[in-house]
Image (tube, rainbow, N blue to C red; front, side, top):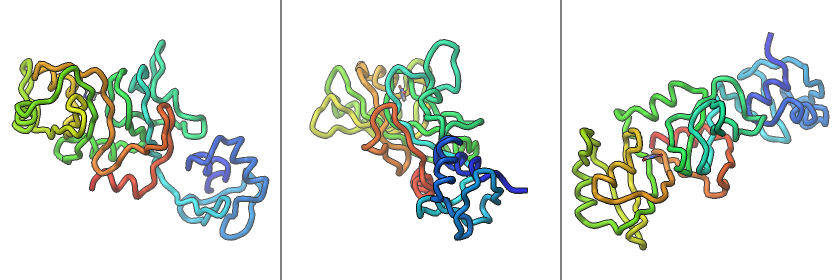
Length: 234
Ligand code: URA
């Protein structure tokens, strides 16, 4: 039984089947301590010890990817006309069942997680789990003390009641930082609308304890480590 070595390494995000095939043939991949140069050799994920270029490949059943989402891209799995976040993934990280865990608006940028782990997505998105999402919003007007208090109390707007949110500014009073634990449609934009302010630009910086990797350019992505996945809930 088991799985082909090239398929296994590709599933762990090491590259396309072709790329990992090359790596295997070069002798850089060891299985249980011995070089394995046959891409079709069978391995037992989670049981056999596999290393590539000296790094141990710790088997992860699911993939979770961090993307620095650019503006103009849909948070969807597919669309007939428009580019989706899944279209941005390099071939080596694409596999069946991946979906964005939560949505950012088309014009919103920043941290988006893409996963095939339904349980993780549910845990992250459920308001009950209290995972705060932090955004930076560029506004058309400065934040006032009354806005901060209104956010803290929970904004009501057009029949919606939003949960209490944290709002603060640092140097620039038009650059607001907001933390919300819900993820409702256009939530940050609407909460500011309720305060008579318009969001000109919106970027997500953080989910729970996990920050957007500042070395990722817009449109770039990488796999999360198991420790980073844990950090979401801390
Ligand atoms: N709130 C919004 O208004 N838009 C987003 O994309 C995310 C949060």
